[in-house]
Image (cartoon, rainbow over all chains, first blue to last red; front, side, top):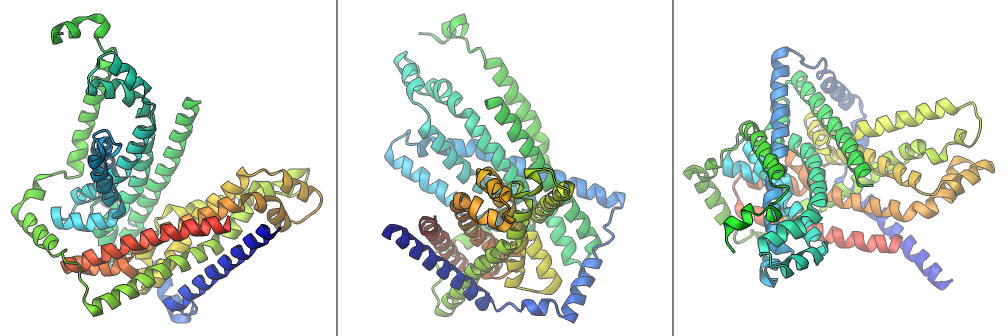
Length: 262
Length: 280
């Protein structure tokens, strides 16, 4: 009874703290939400929205959009395929296969790569490699290597050591032991992680262009900066289609893989 | 033990070797146009001009900048980021609640027996799902960019962007969680004639509350990261400060901001752990 009441008090206190935090946030930002709906602001917003219509659907521009979409896809694919290899290579020491010191070095490397958001990597890579999709690819690859490396390392650690022990007892070398003992065990899981990350990276690749990472994002930023709203509207439509297609395809793939696993 | 015997002995041959080689070759063939499309030129990284720019910039990272007026700016930006995330999640919650309530099948009155409003309920639920998908389909940073450009709003653009995208996400996950919990208590309440709000509060929430809370707190954590990132398109907070420092090549400030960002993410992690434990 007392513990129940104690829990209740703690819960209520927590809710009060949250409510205070929310109120404080709104006050700190001092956002004039009422002002958003005033006559003048409303007109400006309405004008801005109206300028988006009709979207520019001329064949020339559509061709450009098609190219940018392909570029976005290429960036996302490379930004996932490279980490599959790099992350895999770092995951081996991170799973403790080469002793404690390499393990900690690899872990902190992965944490470092992972904790910097893609967009920050992209702004850094723009400095290192210039504007364009190459910078976006590098940015995605750096962040995703951190994520996949950690996930792969966890799979490696959780995999049963028995096949490898058996192979060792039969006299197999360390490389063969890994490729024929452990890799087949963790491959499906790692592939699943990679596909999931690819799905996220497609979304991310569309927006990396905001800081100069190429693809659709760069087009949107460019046309909005020149106040070419009609073109921006077409880019937005393309982005939405890409994201929706990505969502439904990955949902379908997940169901298909899930059905296969059962 | 010679390589020749092991390669020719049928029992030692890898039965999957040919298939694996096929996959590798296919992947390499597919990779080529991709590298071309993404303008993959690693050599540019080594170009003297780029190396020099990057080298100078990275040298500036140490020591991190601790000038008093910069620290004041940093503190204000950090608080702003936290406030954007918190206010954004609060608004998103307000957006998500009615959407999820309408879209949850377990709370359908017409599902418990013959009723006139069956198709109406179905249309409403489908409509709500479509709204959720539309809200989610445009990333928050795109909304932020549009709001910044449309009205020159700073942090408010971030709050609104979070409210839209995260509202859609929360609504989707809320309704999924509610539909995954046992529907029988809610059904029983509805059959006994209670209203839908009562069925939600007394039939579904007691079981689902824990998961709902922990997902919301997790989203708050994500919102902090999103709030930082949205700053890059002008929505205020740490991101905007970072963007300015990057554009001005002030390495010391970039490293200070990065350190604060890391600390903030870890702090959010700790807070969400505590919140989940207490509220669950």
